[in-house]
Length: 565
Image (cartoon, rainbow, N blue to C red; front, side, top):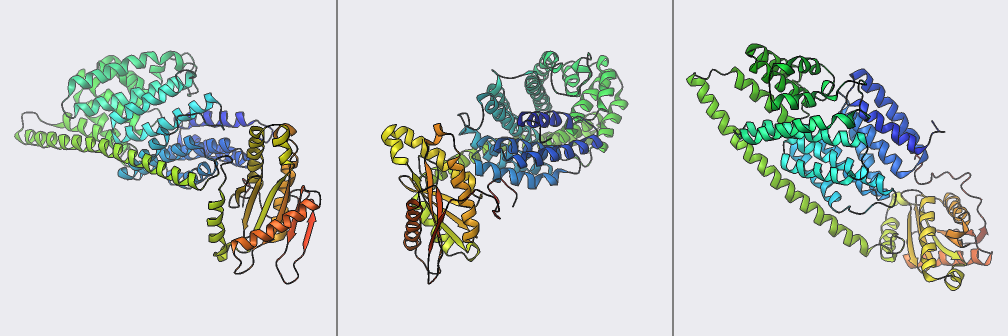
């Protein structure tokens, strides 16, 4: 596996996710194990986007595999932490969407709605392609996150919001979509329209419901061509409508009759999502009813009800099923039946108003999350260097004050980093070139250290690194790795600049200005030694300075960013 490309790993994960949703349970478990192996390899490589893709895949596979949904939680927590750390907004939105899906399964519908509001707020503000991805990959990732939001909204029966989101997902990939993406979009819209139509019937809006069923049937015909080239498990040469239950159901619900019965019976026993089974069951029951097989229709409905007794994946679909049973099982001329029907109608109207309240709640929470994110971004900007994206001097002072007061951060290594030869870049090229060098060096130093180490821009071409819990010996090795990494940069990126690093360890009761002054003195010792090196000053009665060129990370007991801790 180590010899395979990143693109192969990502592509294989997509294939497995397409397969896991339409296979038997034993095969699903095999797919989960394979995805875990792919994730382990991605984490070994450390490429942020690839790791995000595999975290999503391994979490999603568990959400759709019976008995494994709870195992998705730590993966989603890791995905959120990872995407925040690397600034991958689309994947962070997707993590919130998948959390919403997990909460629906746990019957926490209100909490699920909040997660979707968070996801949509992030997506509302993510309108420009991410620098980590190509435009095509960015569009596909945006569409994927929107689809994951749509799934939860569809599960909750909030169809107006679901329609808006699925339209955005289609818009995101309309120029670059391949057969699989087109198939997925069409099938998702068909499922939504069928659920929406059944929901409208429950409040006696039958003409609107019939229009939804008719549109879904038209889409079921249109999906045939792209389905033949998609990644979905399929039988070659067999029409999609004979392989996919929701497609056959769309035709049957639009015009129920006996001609659909045999196909729907066969598709009902095919593996798939529980909510798809409900749709197929209702379509089959209506065809049986239309052909005079009333008792068979009821038996079919009751069998699916029993089969899905423990399923919580789509509460609205379960209500559709129960309503269909009640409709067929009632005696129309019975006074008690009429009373129950009136009561049911009143309840349905109340539920419809509650659904409208859900829409309003979603909009309110979405706007709240968006405004909160904007406020957080403004606050973050006040503590961030606009050129490098690193914490600025004000943020450094706060971090230093916090870490110096924390016993768990001791010993605390403090390093002052200055660029050798940077003045020549500005003099011989331009200040714009100089800014590019500062950005590259800042990113290189940041990547050379651990995730919980802090690198801040101190001013001009100077940076400060805080390494909590690091003895001087370990910190020296880590900073030596940073020195080597900058020295190894291609000349067109660094223009030959190197680092002079002064390293000290914080003394008890020492003020920030005092420890930085000692680090500054050590840095000048490194300069006098020729630069491109780390000079250390150890605290104590007989403080001494030593300067040497660090060979890199060999022997460093502290893992670099992205490595296991």
